[in-house]
Every structure is written in structure tokens, then in C-alpha cells.
Length: 306
Image (cartoon, rainbow, N blue to C red):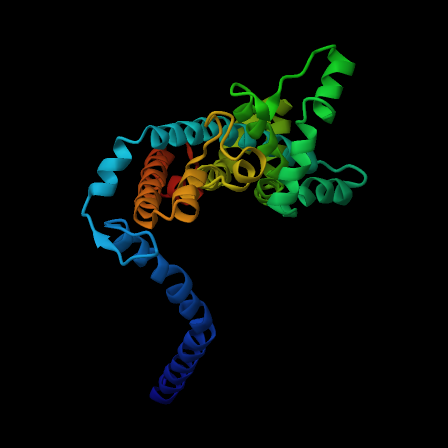
């Protein structure tokens, strides 16, 4: 390589670098103004008592101490954990099954994929209003179907302390279209030669799923698990629109409780402390799952090096 050629390459690299920073500068500016700035402000406010009307007053760790003795904090954490515990695995299983079905070569496949994905792009408020009608104990379609098909008197759903969380878990399946798309991309990346070789060895469908599909899909499942947990701990719209946290705090989700303190009671310091505790909970769960990933996630590059 001649010095002139190296100089020209170096010049092109510097030009590309300048264009790179030029094009990402709107994102960087937006991040610092709309994300990093509020995050730092929230961290500072979590050590203060601030009601908007008067200047913030530094209280140290008093907000954390109050939070640990707040029964509604523990109730909100319990409700959110229960919802996450059931909705995340159920969403993963259902979306994987639907993705497997949509990966088959059948007539009208594009239409089926559109039907399953469309609900995930509908506004959260519109979806909540729709499901309020579905769960209505008097004229809702769900109790009507239960009565007509199984002669079962449906529960009160959103008006029942026992059934409100199962109802919201059931409703969470409405938005699995996004996960289905990711699973479909993963399924189509599996080499068909692996299935052909297994068929030659006499493998049945279950064996191919367990020994080929599931291991090669484990990185996708891992991704959806992480995103599902993060999303489930940030549920807000359904609880705000459909139940308001009731009945008797049975659907008091963590982010709804945070919102109430911030924008109804104007306790910005306490709400900021709640936000940072939520961040730490999600961080710990995410790190724990990352830590366990070496036991159940198949990484082809790692396996090859071994």
C-alpha cells in the first residue's frame, strides 16, 4: 500500500466520521434534552421533598425510608410482580406457538400474519376501552361466550379483586404481534438442512422442535424475555383507563402508583424515589437473566470455539 493511497483512505475515513457525527447529532441532542436531562433531574429530586409550588427541600434518604414503610408501595410491587410472573411466560409461549403456525406454508399466510400483527399497533387507550366492553359482566362478549358454550356464569372480571389481574394477564395476549414478528424472523433463519438431516434420521416433529428449533430460537426467546419483563413492570395505560388501581388496590400497578404521587398528589421527590427503585428492580432482574443465559441460551459462535 503506497503512502498516497493510505493518505487518501485516511482522508475518506475522517470525512465519513464527520458525516457520522453530523447525522446522529439530532439524536444525541434529543437524548440529552429529553432523556438524560430528566433522568439526572429525577435522581436529584429523589433526595428532596418537592411539590412544584415551593422550591425543593433536601431530605437525603427520607423518601426511601418512607417508601419502605408504605403499605401501598408493597401492594403495587406485589400486583406488578404477579402480573409479570404470569403475563411474560404466557406471552412467550403463545407468541412462539403462533409464530410456528405462521411459519408453515399455507394459503393466505400474508393475511394471517397481518391479522395477528395488527392489534399490536392499536393505541393502548383504544385497546383498553375495547377490553372494558369485552370484560363487562352484564353485556360483555366474554361472559356471553362462557354462558353459551360452557353454561358458566362468568366472573365480575375488572370489578373483582380475585379476577382483575387474571383479566389483565389475558388481555396482555392482545399485543403479542410484535413478539410474533421477532420469532418469525428467528424461525426463518434456521437452516433447512438441519431439519432435512433430522428427517433422514427418522426424527418426528416433536424431536425436531426440541432438538433444533428450541435451541436455535433460545437467543430470540432470551431477547423477548428481557423485553417482556421490562414492559410488564411498566404497565400503566390498562390500569389507569380500565380500573384506576381498583377494586381496593387489587390492580394498583407500580407505574400507576408512581403517576399518582407525581401528577395527582404532586409529590415529585417521592415519585422520583419510586422511579429509581423501579429502575433498580428491573436492572437486578435483567442482570440475573443475563447471568443465567449461559445455562440455557445457545450461542453458535461460543459453541464453535469450544
